[in-house]
Length: 239
View 1 (cartoon, helix red, strand yellow):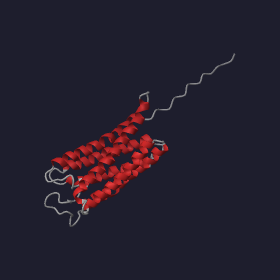
View 2 (tube, helix red, strand yellow):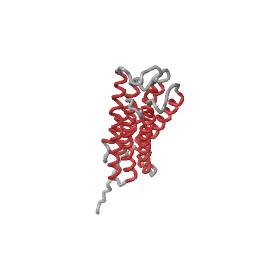
View 3 (spheres, helix red, strand yellow):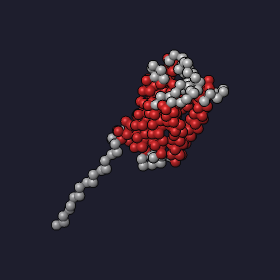
View 4 (cartoon, one colour):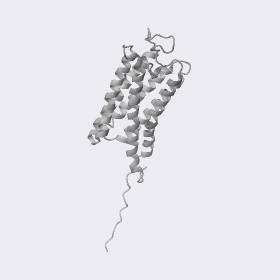
């Protein structure tokens, strides 16, 4: 008599923890809109503050400055969580290392901007000089975090440009590349205005706001895109 031995069915591999990754990506969806909404409201309601001229960071000065400090810290924490989600969503794959790393650097820059308050500039608060005669340690550190945070976000755009080209997502590739270029150009114009370059100083705040909105919009849409990619298989049972 022939004996038939039944082999136990192999156990399927455990699904990736998509739910947690999607939660981290949702942090990136809300971080940018919350940050922009907060500084727009603050800039419109703060006495003697000119959104066209003064930087967003100056909103952290004065009696109500704590609101912008909280805004920096909250956006930084949400963006840092998003960077972790990007790593989990992309790994292994192109941009899985440098993409989230550069987004994380931008997040750390926001956190540093919240911890270290900027020095007065461009005559705000009232009674302060256009350019401080001497920079404080806090102001120097604030500027230092911005010095590497802004280029890092632009670099992240170019890293994802390469990824999207490889995926033949030409619309996303073009959008990412243009965002990186516009972000760098806007940062240069804003920085020149805050340095009191004639013809730019009166619009430095506007240049900065446009730059920040361009960068945060890209991050928000990237979060929506990655979240959608990850959520699609989840509808078929993966969690």
